[in-house]
Image (cartoon, rainbow, N blue to C red; front, side):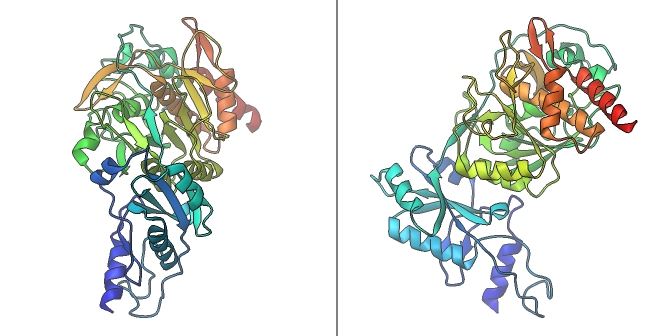
Length: 440
C-alpha cells in the first residue's frame, strides 16, 4: 500500500506541461530524469537522439481505497509499465543514457532524449533503433532558431482610424502600415486565445500584464529568465500590447488572450535564442490541452518527424498556425513545411512565393523586458502582425479556418511604400462583407 500511495502522489505532482518527470515502473526501473535547466543545457543537437516508445496506459482501478482520491482514478499521464520496461531494455541493449523523458498524451507516446555511448556513429545508431520493434520513432535532436534582428531605426507616420492615448502609437510602423487602428473600429480581437511558442516574455510589463500569461516553461522553470527574455516579449507586444492605458504602444489585437510557452532560450546572451526538438515538443503537447485557436511560431529549423506529428495533430483540430519565413527564404523545414501552416515573410519589394504572406518586419517598435520599448526587425515580427490580424478576424467569425483566413489576407494585401503587405482594415472589411452576404 505504501508503494501505491507514493506512485499515485507522484502522478498527482506532474507539472502542467505534461511533465518531464522521473518515472519509476512497478519493477523499480527508473526511466528518464526530471527536466531542468541543466538537462536542457546538457543536450547536444550534434550528438543526442530523440526516441519514442508506445505508452498505452490502463485505467487506474476505481475500487474504494485504490488511490488517494477514493473512487476517482488518479490524474496525470506518465510512463506506463510497457514504456518503462521497453526503455530500460533499450538503454541496456544499445549502451545509451537517458538525459530526460516526457509523455505526449496526444500521440500515446513516451519520449526520451538519449545520449549515445562515446564514439558511436549517431546516424548508424538511429538506423538500428528505428528498426527495433519496440521503437515508434528515432531521430536526431535538432536545433531551431528565432528570426529577429535588433538593428532598427524608428519610423514616423501618423495612424488613422481609432485614436489611442498610448504615447508611442505614431512610431509603430507595423500598426500604421497595416491600418490596424481602422480595423479596431470594428474589432480588437476580443477573447481570441493565442499560444505563442517562443522564448519567455516579461509577464510584468505594464503593456502585457493584464492579458498575457505564462502557458508553461519547457526549458528551465526559471521565472527570472522567463521574464527577462527579449524575443518572446517583442512578439507578444506586437500582437497584444494593451491599448488606451497611457503606456507605450498598442497591439494589433489588444483584447486577445495570450499564453506564452517557453521553448527557446539564450545559450549566449549576445546571440539569438535557440530551441530544440525536446523543448518544442513539450510546448506543442501542452497546447493540445488548451482552447488556443492561433499558434504563433516565430522560429524555425529542419524538418522533424516528432514535431511534424504534433503539429499535424494541432492543425487537424482546426488551429491556425502562423510561422515566420526563414531568412534564406525556403519552406522545407519545421514548422513552415506543414500543409495548412500560414507562412509570413518580412515585407519586400519583390514578389513572395505562392501562398506566403508579407507583413511589416523592419524597424518595428515593440515591448522589451523590464518594462521597456525598442525597435527590432525580422520575419518573427512579421509573423506576429499576421497572428494579431487573424485574431481580429476570428473574433468576428470564430469558425474561420486557416485556408479561408489566408485567402482573405492574400487578396486584401496592398502595396505600401513600394512593398506588398497585409492590410488589417481591408481584411476585416472583406470578412464583414462576406458575412453580410451570407446572412442575406
